[in-house]
Amino acid sequence: MTNKLKSELMSYIASKGVTDRVACETIAHDVLLDNTAIGFEKRSAKYKVLKYHDPKRNYKASITGSDKNITVYLHEPISESEECGNILDNTPADTSNEDRTAKLIEQRQLIRKLLRGSDERTTAIVQTWLSLDQPTFTKVAEMVGSNRKTVQRCISRLSRNYNADEHGSIYDYLSY
Image (cartoon, rainbow, N blue to C red; front, side):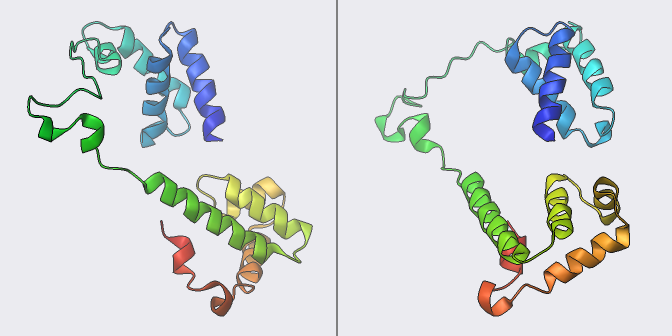
């Protein structure tokens, strides 16, 4: 859902005269990260594009970095002393994305195990639940064409399949 919305926003932003792809992507990300723009993404994008084209607001320069004439070479030493190394050597490794990916894989494997032997309705409910950014029983019920209580019962029945002796603590699967 988010990638589709992002590509729609980028197309919309480009149609409004923003020719730089990086600027389009940055504006789209700004809109998607703005909690007040939920449901009004195109309107928010329109105002950010207007702000982008207005030279008085300096928004374009903040996105493109055109107001900065700083050139940094990643493999050049940071200072004159060679002990400092270069920027790549001094940048700490960020493994949080890899950790999140591994955790997501574990979660999906657990869900597949819990779904073994389930009916089509339960599988459809779980797939719909996983496809939503902020799932609720009501939203899933509307999308599947069922009752909120039915969705709640299906999820509850599915949770009974969880065996702590076999899978370990449930909190290991819930946290990042």
